[in-house]
Image (tube, rainbow, N blue to C red; front, top):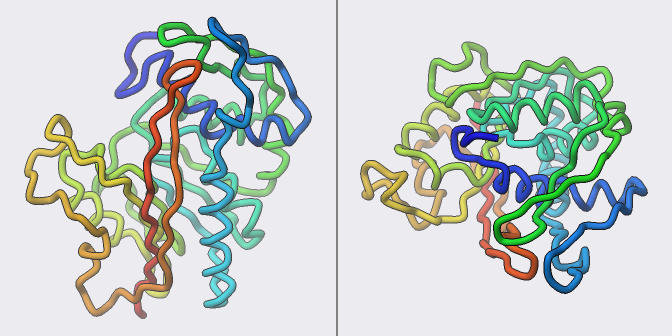
Length: 261
């Protein structure tokens, strides 16, 4: 696969591992992950980030009696966050996913909408990837009854016209030229009374950021207006495996805000 926005074959394998391997194992597929060095246990590869974040979001929703019917996810990647929101919120009927990588959005469709047998790619070595077959039909069945709209482009204020009960953008901001512009666009897409879930690992880098004054130390700084009420915040580990026995670990900071009606 040629470079696709910000992901190549290795990047795609890294995301498959991080986003879906725990669920694949939970569903009974125990295909061996081949390695060019000593075998690596699943315990090193699998992370609990998505379940932990989704559990915290759901706990907050229950506390404030929030039942969304529409979701906008920006930077949806392979669909794991969308999936966790759907299975935890039976009230969700419409999901719009915005993702600039075609490889990611195609995988999202294959997994959550069409439930295909997919090539689940993974890291074999620092320079090699491998794959195994996985039937995603059970995951798609969990999303039955939800109407999806997939948008394969970068997000800005004109990407979608409607407003949503729930807007989610996780670990995307520090990969954007202007995080302030993205946050303002996200806030504009939240209905009055709706909720915005936003997270960041604060890996600010000048290769992405056009104006380094936007590199905040706390994403709560983006919510200075009185119309936004913070419901909760949470931090947990987010990790990618780069080679057989080597991974990068980040600390992701999540905030949940409600737009006051």
